[in-house]
Image 1 (cartoon, one colour):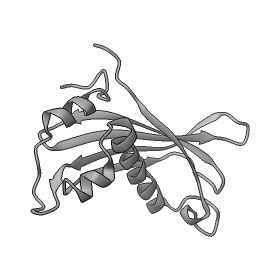
Image 2 (cartoon, one colour):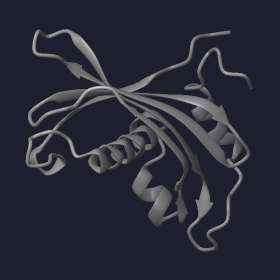
Image 3 (spheres, helix red, strand yellow):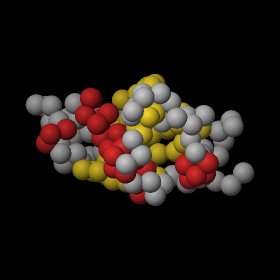
Image 4 (cartoon, one colour):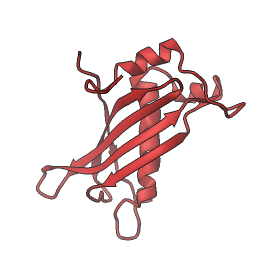
Length: 149
């Protein structure tokens, strides 16, 4: 099987992401992850996320979320986000996200692992919508090579 694509992007940890101790407050990781998924739609899939919501009236609410917090991120850190698709369902998309930064010596350090399932839904009805062939094809490029399909 051909290797899958990985969508990656680096984000800065800013003041508004942090608690008074200067580390990322864990709910802010979820905000950062959603921003990253929006970027994947727009930049990785070529499906502008604002158009998905405003014009197509579709959303991708999270229906399952599992996180492993490995090491804290701090104000000023640059964190590398990576995304692969674990599985495509009829209307669901299972994602694996990782966030990594650098420790004080400059070595790579895993900060967060996320398994997240989102479902494509109509914003008008709140009901799941089947992934169209075009979206499925675009997302399939990011399927993990070892995933059981």
